[in-house]
Amino acid sequence: MSESHRAGLTLLYRGPLASCDYDCPYCPFAKRRDGPELLRADRAALERFTGWVGERPADDRLSVLFTPWGEGLVRSWYRRALVDLSHLPQVRRVAIQTNLSCRTEWLDAADTGTVALWCTFHPGQTPYDRFLGRCRELLERGVRFSVGVVGLPDHLEQATRLRADLPDPVYLWVNAADGHRYSDAEAQRWTALDPLFPYSRHPHRSGGLPCRTGESVVSVDGDGTVRRCHFVRAELGNLYDGSYLRALGPRACPLAVCDCHIGYVHLESLPLYDVFAGGVLERIPVPAARVPGRPLPLTVQGSRRAGSPGPAAPAPPVPGAPPVLGPSAPEPVPEPPVPEPPVPELPVLELPVRAAGGPGAWPPPGRPS
Ligand code: SF4
Ligand code: SF4
Image 1 (cartoon, helix red, strand yellow):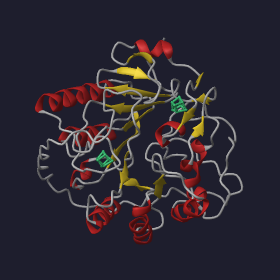
Image 2 (cartoon, rainbow, N blue to C red):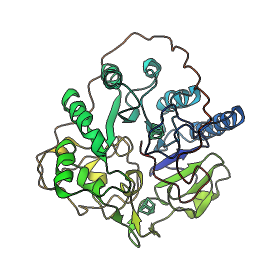
Image 3 (cartoon, rainbow, N blue to C red):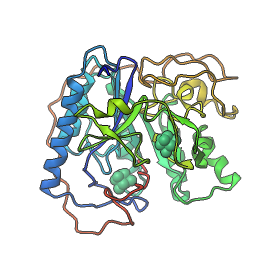
Image 4 (cartoon, rainbow, N blue to C red):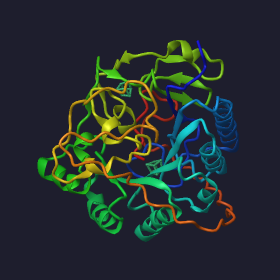
């Protein structure tokens, strides 16, 4: 079987790193301590992965989303990976989930046509003005990004303020909080901030339904073990010996429900490749999908079973919505390059992992950011 991925392959990479500089009460990985040995292993694993991506043919169509258990961008090797991969012709999009605690100057070295950030605001962990300031820096640098919050009642006031302070083209998403049941009135309040919140409010029935994972989307861990997604444990092979290639193909979801955006966005029974056309990995919808009050499409219009969800994807209109006028990303504003300041080492804290589970547990809990 050819090792070419000209038809498109999306890789969701998650190495062993699990520490974070924040301590969100809803996160099982807050204040986890990664010792020097694990950090070295994480760095080596990430560099092996980026090396593999770098060796792919230039006409491959790869999209990469880093979904670390903890916070990656406080580590230099994640920042370097994003910069380096953003310049490769075979990489259509490279993105990371982040709490945006890091400085942003390093992004000046990245190709802003390829790099993107999925940013989560955690009220209580960072001053509001600092987070908003970081978002403004991303806008000035022309970096594609989405911003989101976990939809807990305590977050509503600051999320509302953030929505008002961010320019309209910046999409603010709301994730339904794990274990929280939303009354209709409550859901309405969140939907006023994120018209796509109804997609997150309830888990999606997925058992037996076709899902692009395992065919055009795979999960890769630090050892190169390939699975279809972060939530189904069965292994498809290994990235580095090429054994995963034999296993790629269409297959139905073996789980009853899919409850996490980075999973159900790939369900073929949902129209989310249309809703997020060109921005699936960084969670940026087409502008027409964000029209408040417009009924959300719940069925698939046409099929794009294979292929990359990166920027090359066309952006068909959402049914019943006005024509798509253009990408929601801001125009780049050139900035003189600034040398990257050293990122301070994270304090080592000895608190226990907050909840049951952990990087070794299965199934893994959803990461809020
Ligand atoms: S939710 Fe995200 S930012 Fe908060 S502690 Fe967990 S990994 Fe860190
Ligand atoms: S629907 Fe979700 S759990 Fe099922 S295979 Fe797809 S990503 Fe995995």
